[in-house]
Length: 184
Image (cartoon, rainbow, N blue to C red; front, side, top):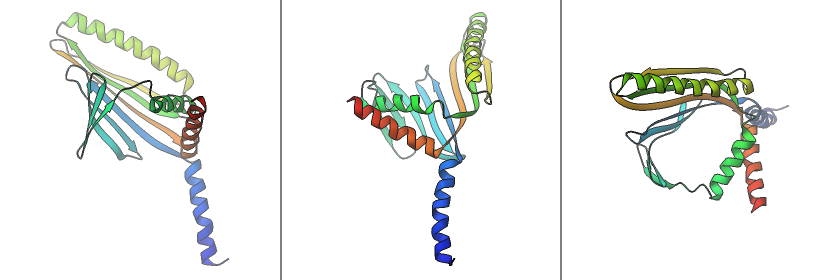
């Protein structure tokens, strides 16, 4: 076998390896409703894919990054949201959750109501974590909470790391598009 043939065999082998082995995505979402500011970010193998600051204005989301400002209308009846919804249905069983961390800092100005509110949020998060852990037993789940007793504040952030194969991602997206097109 000569060098040219060997190189031609390496290309399909690399494509097959990329399709089979999992890719690691890190998703970061945070939002502060008091300031109407938040962050949405996606990292692939710890390299930034996108990082947007977001603001919600009625039916519109304003996404801001270093180079551009975009305004997207929230229309949950559109075909784009239908494809995303079907895609999430298709991919939810294929995702492997590595870690799911929730950070929050809440204060109402009153110590008693702040601690009561944080206790309720912790119970809701623990209920969610029990359900998630039963479906994804290898996930590392954690809550980092801070109670601000003497000031009004509401900050919440989610950091999750997931893995899935590129083949599952592409297959689920194509299948979702076919299902939505056939419904219309």
